[in-house]
Amino acid sequence: MDRYFTIMVVPEREKGVKSFRIPRVVFHAALFFIVIFVVLLGILTYDYWKILRQVYENKHLTIENRQLKEQVQLFQMKLNTLTEDLERIHTFEKKLRIITGIEEADLTQSIKGLSTEDEYPLNETDEQDPEIPKKEEEKKKDKQTKIFENLDQLKTFTEAPEYQNLQDLYEKKIATIFGLQTSYSYTKEWGELTKQSFSLASDFAEFDYKFSTVKGFVQNLEVNIHKLDQFLLDKDSFLRSTPTLLPTKGWLTSYYGPRISPTSKRLRMHEGVDIGARSGTPIVAAADGRITFAGKKPGFGNFVQIDHGYGVETFYAHAKGLFTKKGQVVKRGDLIASIGNTGASTGPHLHYEIRVNGTPVDPLYFVLD
Image (cartoon, rainbow, N blue to C red):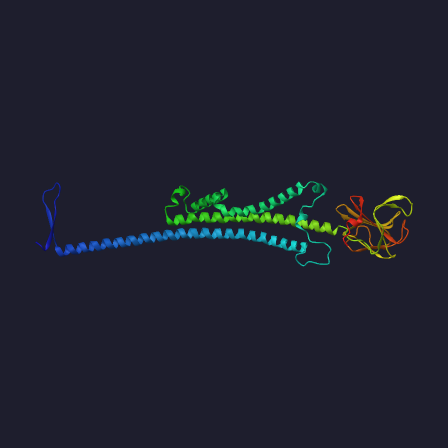
């Protein structure tokens, strides 16, 4: 009996008990194979679970990788626009270097470099009120502060509402990509893969926020460089149009102011200066401008009038020969006439006038050389 196991089957309603005799060796072998089967089934089930998990991870990482590629392309496009802005600013910077004389300066020019104080020139009212320059200086500092205040925001970007909004938008986008449109705010921390994917939202938001901040800084910088460029162009044009030299070589025979007229012998206002010289001595334009009159004028003889813009005009009278015509554009130092003795003149000389908005002023106020 010790060599067999007896299995008895007792029905519930029917009579009779059924019994089976199983050899001990067969029973042990069956039990062994059952254990082996259960172990193998467990191993296969675990491997199958790992394979399913790996497939899920691969699918998740594939979607995440595609999203990263799209974001990289988008960020690259944004950086390209920023690069173009920086290239334009670099071009303006080179232009300003040439205008200000920092690069390839021509020492033969009489125009001096601009100081920082030239940006806010003072008029007569400003000189009388010392508070006005202070206000202008405060405005200048405010402009500089406004330019750089955007960059200071980069240090505390996590506290900015714009950053929080960008992060929320990117989380919604990531949730949509992975099919987690609802309740993702609760489930995004449950799995490592999901947690890792949603952590990209803060990185994307940080890039976008910093990019928009730097972009705004570059745009403000470009606007200010444009203003500086325009200011320097206007300043350069104004300096080139200012009659800063005597138009001929000779000696001053009569100054600006009241004097006894050599023709009428009466006290009259002399509205210019007289420069005596030999007949035929060249007369040049005192500054850049356009000829508005070239011909004979009663009392002045052969006469040239140049409009320099900004309300400034110069008159050249008693010339012998005229070498320009009406409408011609001239530069400072261009030959326009020669010394003569035409009109109401007592000898070869040049009568030279400067008028600002139609009012005669002393030409010597403008002369630098």
